[in-house]
Length: 406
Ligand SMILES: [Fe+2]
Image 1 (cartoon, rainbow, N blue to C red):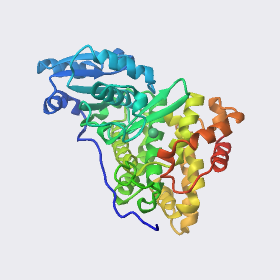
Image 2: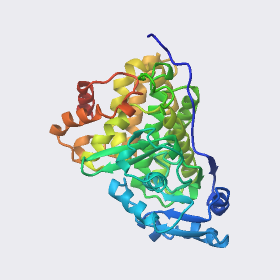
Image 3: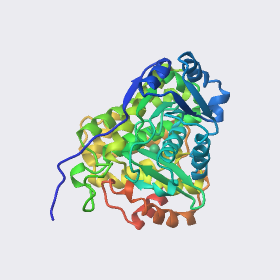
Image 4: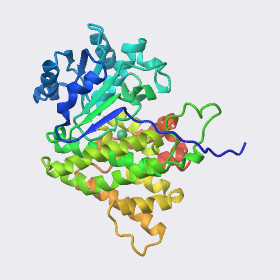
């Protein structure tokens, strides 16, 4: 049947509290969520930096009891989730506070699923597999990247399969988020660069995602689909996020204490997260799954590396949008045709990646040419993300994109 979608929907986190020193509201927010016994998740770096007192003190002042699990890790494994869920069994917790980067938020989401519904992470991989609401999550991000604080996804590493896998369900969107840009001031330059490029990838991929009317869906998926393709609301958020990243990321990397740049990056992250977690992404994030698993390079680094090449691949079907991306990136497009303007977006992204010191070729992060075909084949399995790519892909076309990035 020839059929064009006419309906989209938008979901995000619950309450979002944004601004310098907003961390001071943490105990009040927990009270509003009905929290009396709190599980705080964090990692050893945050603990050692002494940041935990920003949460422990206000909780103590309101006599809210809490336990701290501080063994979070970067890009959490399935085993780490099981360990954290085991820890959570020691108490009866009513709110989970995720204090850290996107990895901690993802760990908290997956742990919340197990705390509420039991079973194993394997039972929930994919879209819409979580049977009901989970324990309320309050996310307090300390980096400006991943967008996990507003998204429905928890990305885990399956060590045995050497793959990234995602639990994606609207029940996983945090009930409250506190974004305090002051918490990102101590984020080191390499992490700021990698997470910042992840924000740019989210924004550009959301902007270029297939128009929602043409998202290819199987029968019955209309009511459950989370990523709808792009529509005016996601375009608006993504376009502004691209502008903010292009104007602030170099500064945030070079001048870690530049509060204005940090605040704008924190805002860009939220906007890009709201955009991509409703529109979906392009092939960049899908191709990053096997590339991240085989290279062990950070999520943002692999996305940055792939981004210009996937933009080029998608150019034939997204000329008008890429011309707008070029403009949002600060390129002068006056007097150019749309096609000429669209082409300017690609070197503009490459220049930003170079300027902030991230690798630009797969060979520089230890990938071998023989890995390319298996990675292209593995990407074809990531249908949840691939279907919002605006141009249809094949193993051969993915292989070609990887080769260009090699
Ligand atoms: Fe990402």
